[in-house]
Length: 318
Image (cartoon, rainbow, N blue to C red; front, side, top):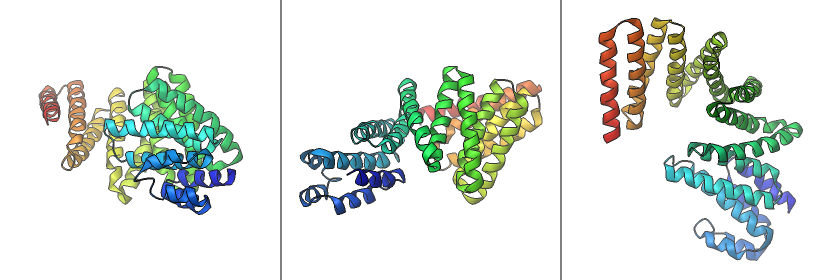
């Protein structure tokens, strides 16, 4: 049975719960196969299957539900992700699969964090970190998941006020992601994400030279990615806003203005397809209002301040 659990763990890890079910159907006794064939349509049949086969099928079911609910970023969808992930982690412990437990805890931490339940998210991440450090020592392919945990947990500590602890985890995540990106360009978005996170932290810590360096590197990566996939435009716009805020602190007003205006243009384009981005437009307009006030251009400051308020109102009532 341990070999079966190990095989489905790898399939779930790569996001293939349907293949995991097909694998189990090829190995399970006939009575289990008959009940499990339609379990995604009628999950109650899982309760009729006793022992480890029942737990394995339940675990595959929750893995499938986690994948489905991850497409729904509404509060209900995120809550569904949390429930599926935490139930999957519990079943994984019962089946003594550390690999699966770590995968589900990572997903649970992300969902709980999005729900604003930072304390519970931290518990998930800390346990996942403990397991993933152990797995990564034996198999370097787990470094990707470890870097995910370190990045996300680092952000939680930064936001809770423990910036030095957060900095330590983010710097470790960056080191891992640099190495991963060297051997596989597919990891570049993850590298850019952590560069942006650390650059923002360094700005808060007034380590301005490192902040500037990391924002510039993240911007460069996202500009490359946008050429291949325009979905990364939103990430580029976020980095531009963060970078512009640093340049405003450094009183490099013209450079800051240029970045804010480029970010604004991107969000305006995105808002034509999805009104969700109107809130980002309002944010950037408010940033520009403050910047123009610093520059002594009070007319433009007022212009963008009024536009920010108008856009906020439209978004709130829309």
